[in-house]
Image (cartoon, rainbow, N blue to C red; front, top):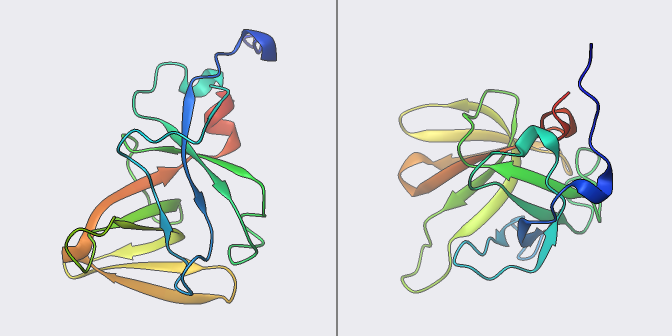
Length: 149
């Protein structure tokens, strides 16, 4: 028998929202505040009940449509492996010292020793990132993963 889903009012609201994904600088980059600046806290679904390090981001603007619409919330888990075809948050080391890292929300196409190749939705095109600048690849979870179905 299927395990019953918990009622919404019983799910903790403890997943930190660390930023807003938007086409902020013409490159589609956004600031991902991983140093403790939480902009909101959202519900923790049963599929991530025991996941450590899970966070969320809000989508803003139309640069990621139709995969990610403005106002939608995306849950991210830095501890789950990224697979080809997954949506990922790519965190890059800053070009200039003292600047915050840049982050991008894209679909992972392939990884090589020299680059990470992704697809953006709007306009649809491949975007390549030099592997030596990629600080972290973080998997964006599906609703099924968040809800444990």
